Length: 76
Image (cartoon, rainbow, N blue to C red; front, side):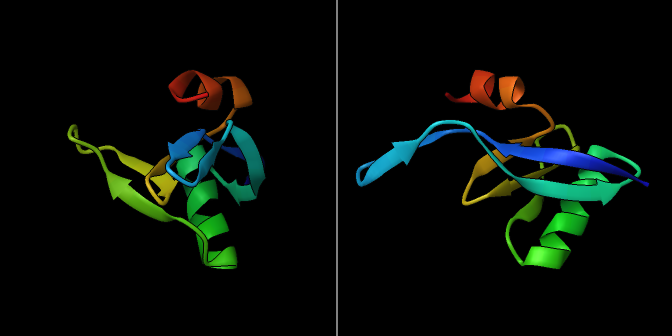
């Protein structure tokens, strides 16, 4: 098991927004396992399935990524 940093893509809503940012560390054999561990431990986020049947983690529709550059590339 290893530690993964978890970053969330940015968002923009009528009330404001945020740029891509670090949300915490998770622990697992893969990034998605680390996200699941983080969700279980903190109660924040959820696992969804994309159109191609792959799992991904997000919170309020903002996807999570293993690097800040990937999160920023997805949405600022």
